[in-house]
Image (cartoon, rainbow, N blue to C red; front, side, top):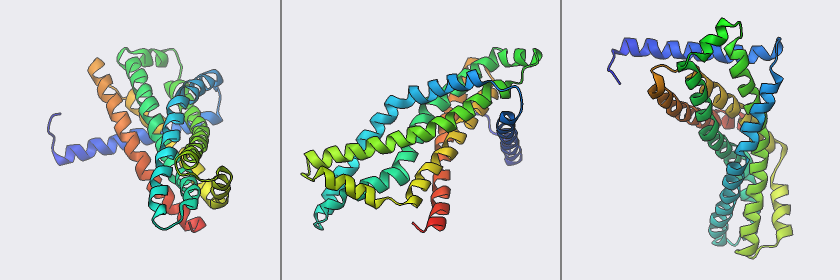
Length: 259
């Protein structure tokens, strides 16, 4: 990477933020005007949602298993092993479920979007779409944005459910807890604010994954080497943004609901 002066570097970053903001705004606004490419949206829902299901289920399940194992071991010192269900449910629903699901989907789909759109960019397919009168943002970005936000919401619910189930498996088979007591404690530990916090985060994560992946894809330059660079940047930037926004949303939700 060539060295540039701080002034040029700052201008480049500000220009990138401006381009990203314009692309995101157009992608959001396109759903409220015609034409709408519903077939593309459904195709992306299948690719992003159904395609990401195995990795989300595996990640959520074993995260719940490890969480229950570690929690029970620590709680055993205080004679409170029965509270394992409370800790697993709160941790999965409020934090680990949304964040890990977002990171897994980011690694799988942000890179896919960047590489796919980047390949279209360097082979001038996007320029051909413009020449034929088709808006590339409406055709390529908007379906991916809404499909990612919609499906990530439900993928997070699946991750939470299998995580709590994984915690139950470990608690019952290894710790000797009663299954009915575990699920009852898990249910009683959650309140409306916890669920609202856990289901708000995937909306932001889905937006970040789709817009960042599509932005780096559409702005790809430099041939096939540029496609690889855009793919890497999309995963890194989206993952970092997910973690930062997770902190901001958590702080806001704690201020609203008090927990």
